[in-house]
Structures are given as structure tokens and as C-alpha cells.
Length: 430
Image (cartoon, rainbow, N blue to C red; front, side, top):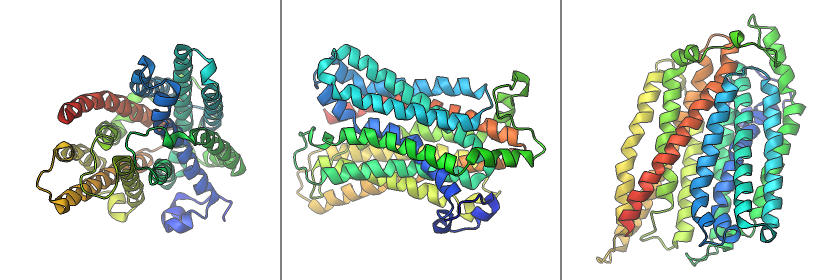
């Protein structure tokens, strides 16, 4: 393994297997894993919170999912707006966010372990506070690492994106493996036996990221790069408002890229709603096995999309940010197909044509895979094109917080719109 820093030009010319031999590249990838891992832990633990902590029928169980999404997305959005105005201390932000994330999940594990001794209303409040802290910690780390990756080069931005995709794949694969031994769609507690271990894995990932970040001396490498550049990069908290890169300056240069990001996430947030409400019709498996398979296929597609973002045809200047934006808007065309498969999965097939039913299941699996591919592809391309659209290192660092605002905004709007689709699907299933 290479412990040194390789320039973006060198990394860009290497195959993925050779890039992974660079510990610096791996550091960015692992931190990318750490960014999305906490959200996936909480998401995969939804049934655990509803059934085991809040006892299924209580108001807290009914409010948990919507409250979790609202608290998380709004906390992230507001904190990213705060960070965007303070364009300094990026290496500190990475480590600080990871430390807070570590602490949040240690406390979450502890609170859940003594659940029977806490008033349910108070526990609900504490868990929402910890979810808010986790979202803020993610925003802190993402703001810092994307700022640094923008300066290091687009390939390192892609590495962070790849890490996020890996964090999406692994929990869904684990959930799928756990579901293989299940046959009862109504037994919701079987898959929650290892939930405390899931929580603790987040803390383990955070510690690993911190160790590797310091071991590779990412902050020192950033300082060396800034010393060799004519632009003076602020690394402490003495920066004034006049030194900050204005929001409108960044928007004028990145508008199509950030609009691509926000549009992609808004459309993508319908995925969990359909993913949990389209049922198996012909394949020899139960819904408790089919639904984790769907989530796994989407995440595998997302990972593949982030990998192909580095193909020459997509890196070519002729594939402009405007084309990327048009590409993101075109994903709306997936929605009618999702409704089609939803209606078919809830309809009673009296024809007895099992081959047709199997084709429907396989077609839906392919649809979710392609939906995941387009998500990962657009998001990765957008972030990779950010440093290429800017001229100074100060702009590239400031773009880390700037793009995070649009990520959070897209997720917040998407989570709200998802309730509309949930209502529509609810009417279909009646």
C-alpha cells in the first residue's frame, strides 16, 4: 500500500483496484462510509424502535418514522446553512463530527438498553435529540471532507461518494441475509436481535475514520497544498465575513450541479416508500425476504452508478453540468413505472399465470436497480464536476458547505413529498 499522497492526475489514470492501494484514497472512501452509515443504522432499526422501544401501538411508535426523518433532515439543513457562512477549520470539522457521531451512538445504545426504566415520552425525546446530534455530526464531517476533497481533486470527491454507496450496500446485504431464514411476514422482531451491534458498528467506523485520517495526515497534506498555491486558504477561526466566498458567486458557477443534486434527492426519496410497499407476486419467497432484496438491488445500483461516473464519456467537458441537470430531471419518468408495479403487486391475479408474475417481480427488481444506478451516477458526477467548475482553492473549500446545503434541502423536500406518495400508495392497497 502507498502511504503517500498521489495527485489527482495520477489517481485519475489508475484502475479502481490500483486506486484502492493508496491509503489516502482509502481514507476518503472510509469517511464516505462513515457519512451514510449512521443514517442506515437508524433506518434499518425503524422496526426495532417501533416494536421493541415504543411497543407498536403507542403514539410514539406511530410518530417515530416521520419524526425521525423530519428531525434528521431539518437539523442537517439548518446546521449546513450555519457552516456555509463559516468557511474555515475544515480538518477540525471532519474529526469533530466523527467524535460527536461516536458519542451519539454510544448514548443511543445505552438509552435503548435501559428502555424499560425510562418513561416512554422522555425516551422518545432523548432519541430524537440523539438523532438530531447524529445529523449535525454528519453535516460537520461532510462539510469538512468535501471541502478537502474538492482541493485534492475530483477523484477524491468520487472516493467519498463511493464510500457512501458502500455504506448503503452493506446494511441492506446484512438485512437480506438475516431475512433468508424467515418465512413469516408478520414476525417483525426476528431481525432486531443484533440491533445493538449495528449501533456499535457506527461507533467503530467513526473511530476507524479518525485513526486513518490522522495516520494519513490529511490536514498536513492540505496545508502543504495550500502553501504551494497562490490562494491563501483559511485554516483557523480568524476568518472574517469579508474573506468568505459569497453564496451567489458559488451559485453562479455551480447552479446546474447543485440543482442536479437537489432534484436527484427529491426524486430518490420516493424509493423507500415504494420499496416497502411493492410485494412479491411470483418468485418463491416471502415479502419479508423480497423487500430486503429490493433495497439491496437499489443500493447495488447506486454503487455501480458511482463507479461508472468516472468513465471518459462522462468526464468529457462536452457532458456539461446543464446536461447533468437535464439527466436528473428525466428521472421523474421512473414514477409511472413504480405505480404500475405497485398496482400489479396489490391486484389479485386470478389467471394463475405464474410466469407472468415472476416476470413482474424481475421487472420491478430491474427497475429499482436502474433507479439506484441513476441516483449514484448523477450524484457522483455532480460532486466530481464541482472542483472542475471552480478556479481557486478557497472557492473549492467553500463549495463543501455550499453543496451540503443542497443535499440537505433535497433530502428535506424529498422526505415531505414522500408522505404524498405514501398516502397515494395507501389508497391503492385498500
